[in-house]
Image (cartoon, rainbow, N blue to C red; front, side, top):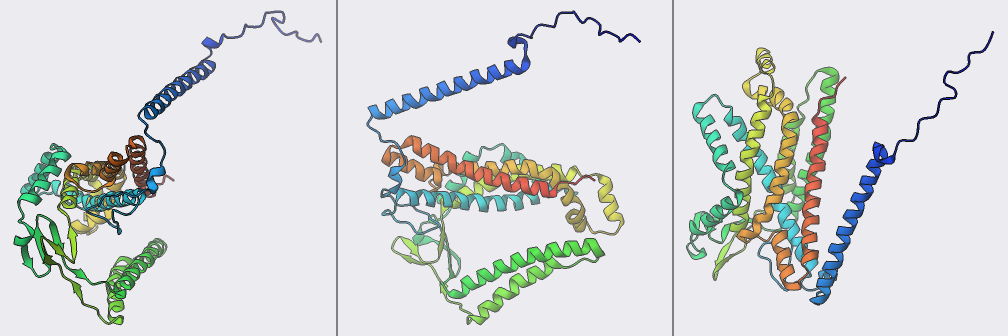
Length: 398
């Protein structure tokens, strides 16, 4: 049998496609050109900056961080004096920013959740008050709110000599809120460590209780046991150490108070402004998340005899969190970044301290770079945690 010959054996091969018509090659060329443009612009900026710095006899680098700061900081989490280095001054600023951001996020979540739930209340007055709060606070710039609260704290309260004293150990004046605290004692550190250990053990106990309930259907009161232990065990440690009750009570010395703990007007105004402003946005996120849960879910929960509080806690919020978490992360980041406005009311955050350092050393580029790196670190840390929590709460498809 004659073997079939391939058809068109002598036909010419198609010519190669020109590179400007090849999408893959064209994309590579475009990327190379873009890279060269970015590299050229970066080199121009760097060389121009170096030339300007040399012409003005300004040194570059971070060697100045080991020099004496020579300025005081009004509020510090750790011990600090003007004789310390710029490095420690910047550390104080970073800790101050972290303090107001962390406390602000916690209070914002609490207040925003309460207002968001109140916005959906069947009570007309409660719902309208929550809605009015949201509309007003969302539409007033946060900087104006900071100025308002700062003015309130300085104008509404008297000087230290005429300080308000609602009860023993508490004073309110334009220097802040000054209140008594227990004197330093070994018992307090032991109580703190005991409380922390109870929380860690309670977390593992709660996980074990969930697994046990999934396997047997029998609930385990891990939260109640942890709460009771977190109260009783530190009290037991306090009794073992001899029940120390000595207090560090503030007293007026000259023009200011000595002793106790002082919460400055700058910190209070900053915290209050950030929390109220951001909680208005969080409230809308919570409201949208709750409304995303189907009405049938709520009716089914009520049909099996759950009380309204249990329906919210066990049915609505766990499902609403999957909608709430992503936009909530953005608001947490906004609060952290808005804390940089503290410089406007004199709070010693990282930006304010870095600006003081720039004015003394002239190292503007290095100072701005440090500000960018610190806020980038805070933002990425928050995002990583929230993304981890979001994945944990996500529904797993089977």
